[in-house]
Image 1 (tube, rainbow, N blue to C red):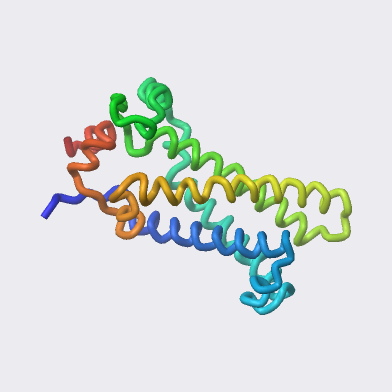
Image 2: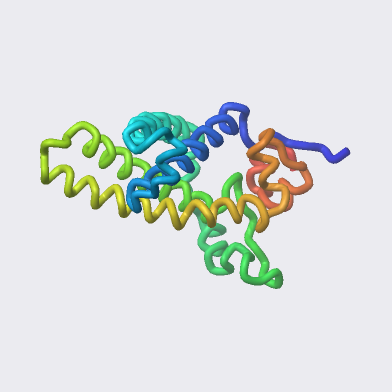
Length: 201
């Protein structure tokens, strides 16, 4: 049996699924609001009920997003020459012939994706509270709807790409989000700088 190494803690794994689950439900209900999709509204018990669920799910999403900062924010702001070279070869996704530079625990694509989700998440959260709590302020409502919709588009584009890269494009990656573990041999190949840093090389 292959030797395994823990890449994500139990708390990280649980929080990832809370973040992902709340995000998917928020996107579904938000899409239903935008296009007034009666069948989707009916699943949530009607539009008024869906609005309440959407609002409180937003609170869950923001709390989960805040917790994610403890796990990923520091790494997301750390870049070096290997990260630049990673971009120059597109991470090896476009060709298996290129040499991908050694990576740490996260590659720069993952770091930037996280920062995009964090930024869009904060924007969609603040604008959501504006629509929820300041219904009588026309200017706040107008600006909040605009920001909310822009952030929604970012999530709608980013989520499918993230799901694809975390499953079909990188076999074995999904396992990390199930139990936090990955084969040590794979970790040495994909994240040699991280493995060296924790003394497992």
